[in-house]
Image: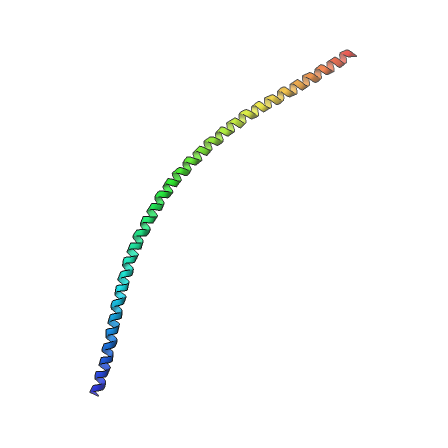
Length: 113
């Protein structure tokens, strides 16, 4: 009986030793994971801050570009207004010239008879 108890104790000791070894390995793995997560968090924060800086610069460039486009559109609008006024003036002049010519022709026709 003592031999059986000793054999069971040896088996239990081996199992406990294996469990202790596994727990130690798990603790090491968890510590490594924590270290990796801390490093990953730091890397991510650095990348996010870099992206924020780039977005701020991009926002400034876009605002500057939009302001430039608005200025160009305002210049085009002014040019178009000026050309429209010139075109209307030219058309009115042409209509008056045609009316005057027709009036002259009608007056000449009336006096010719």
